[in-house]
Amino acid sequence: MHKKIIRFMANRIKHLIRLLKLEEKNYIKNINEYDAILFTFLPPNKALDKKLDKIKKCLYIYDLIPFVCAKDFKTMDREKFKKIVEYAERADLCFAISNHTKEDLLKCNPKVKADNVKVGYLGVNSNFRKICNTEIIGQIKQKYKIPNDKKIALTVGNIEERKNLLFTVNNFIRFIEKNKITDLILVIAGATMHNNVLDIIKEQGEKNPNYIYITGYIDDNDMAGLYSMSDFFVYPSLYEGFGLPVLEAMSCGCPVVTSNTTSLPEVIGDAGIQINPKSNEQMQEALSEMYYNENLRKEYIEKGYKRVKMFSWEKCAKIVYENIKK
Image (tube, rainbow, N blue to C red; front, side, top):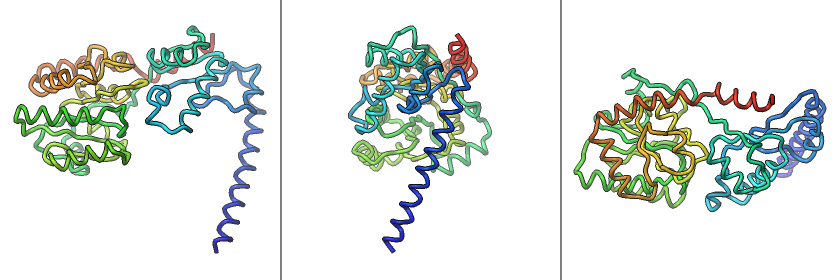
């Protein structure tokens, strides 16, 4: 039985390889009909690159996190990003999702010409908007077992060291204990990875079951509702190529506390509270302002709505198109 399974899998793999080779040949053949090609993640392989002498080659760069936060990534991931950084000097044009990502690229590869790197900010999808329907909000709360009678401080993201989640959890617990607060919870939402950070957070959640709620993965269709039901959003990340969750939160009318480092100030502007992501004092002060000052929250909500208008997929596409056209 084992031999039959192995033979079957081997035949399937051989068939797949033949299809990929055929597809690549057709791809290379047809691509010469175009004026430019935009690689939205990895650069072309050697076989394809040889065929692109007469075509303008463009590369979109989202972040260089495996270089900056190397210990969070496997060697294979770093090798992929190494190819991106190296190819950037040969590309006719590069696009970065923030000025900070552009600066990182120029630091990682000084041979890249600064004038060849254009900044095209990301947009936010149209489904991220304020949801006021109490029935929908109630269903989402029930689905993820979020209490109905509590104010919500929300944080999202993977359990990576750069997300600074332990910093958020520890300061939140310190804040509610110091001020004897009983009507505020911290909701930790998003996909998780089983590591030491997650174990510590779960341990804190078990010690403080009335204050910390770990939802795990959230369906895309529920994210807007989660932002909308939250009183404020906490995102003190140590490194972001852009910081899309900040934009999503503002789009849903959720005031934001975020870091004053990397690309995040480019996104938040004056529409939220910026803190040093390593300062317990600043984090405590930000939590206090967001919890106690309703007028401040309203002010940041309105500023957030205005700020979001600066970012759109239409503007992003226009920057890409116009620069390639030149």
